[in-house]
Amino acid sequence: MKIYLDYNATTPVREEVLELMFDIYRGDAANPSSIHFLGRQARKFVDEGREKVAAAIGAEPSEIVFTGGGTEADNMAIQGTAFALREEGNHIITQATEHHAVLNTCEFLEKHGFKVTYLPVDGEGLVDPAEVEKAIGAETILITIMTANNETGVIQPIEEIGEITRSRKVVFHTDAIQALGKIPFSVNDLKVDLLSLSAHKVYGPKGVGALYIRKGTRLRPLAYGGHHEGGKRPGTENVAGIAGFGLACELAAQELVESAAHLSILRDRLCGQISENISRVKLNGSPRLRLPNTLNLSFEFIEGEGILLGLEMKGIATASGSACTSGTLAPSHVLSAMGVPAALAQGSIRFSLGRENTVEDIDYTAKALVPIIQRLRDLSPFSEEDIN
Ligand SMILES: Cc1ncc(COP(=O)(O)O)c(C=O)c1O
Image (tube, rainbow, N blue to C red; front, top):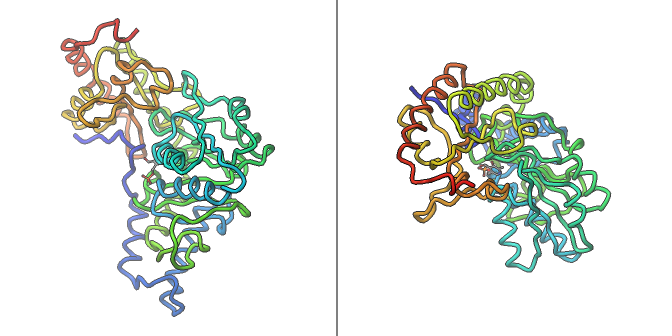
């Protein structure tokens, strides 16, 4: 038995994408900057990839810059804006539950003289747009708030924040890496200037990402070299990866409505069966404003790592809300920011579903969990006082 319920961590490359990438690698994989006919063929693959990624988010192809993944896109957006606009101000606004690709970039900028406001979230993981507006000052040059959270699936009010940033003329970046292919959106509806994407979250290859850069947005490159990607990201393009990303986006857009409906039914089935058969379980994150595939639950009195291992022994791959760093089980920064007590945050599990999951997977997982939780609770050193 092998059940994968960790699609927010990464997704397997889908067959159609693999075939296209194999064909490109097996063919005459020339340099797209070469002007001979083989170079022109490679350029065509890159151009088609760009058109498809742009179409998936309602952008112009010329507004897409390919990167080496989502982390690089986030860095390019944040560092690129900060260093391009440093003469105009030194203040950046973000929020507490961002991915480390954003948070650690902001911390790096703090060491270089920038001031960063980390807005809080409420108990459901949501940022208040009014707080965003209040935090804007004369020095504010950039606001970066994610579209959807990777741990809880919580969807932020990006359109409302976009209205505010536009009227206050502040550059607005969103990390939409988890949102792509799961919920519909467009760069114009969101009113963003910069938007990060990653191929491996939508059944494309790892190590390929993109940054949408609205026409006219100023950005300093992270690296210097040739004139690739409109001078914004030098280096010979990852032709097969870009083409694969484009196809993955095209297929994700075609299947989005059906896939979201299917995943939310499975997700709710899993949640329903767990709550019926296991007591003292709490949902983390907004029940309403959430990605259709994500379920983050805290099981009282036990640690997520124990549940993870128990599930693994049954052939089920999931993720826990704590990161095992330097021998201590640190609770997730996302759950901590939502006010989830450390003991509860440590007992959290993220189930993130994807296109290969079936009703049988869900029923098997829900059934397997019952004795795992029971056994861990029997052994648990935690008491009710730790939780309350
Ligand atoms: C919200 C979010 N941002 C950024 C990243 C980083 O993307 P990549 O793995 O492509 O560098 C991830 C992936 O884990 C993510 O979920």
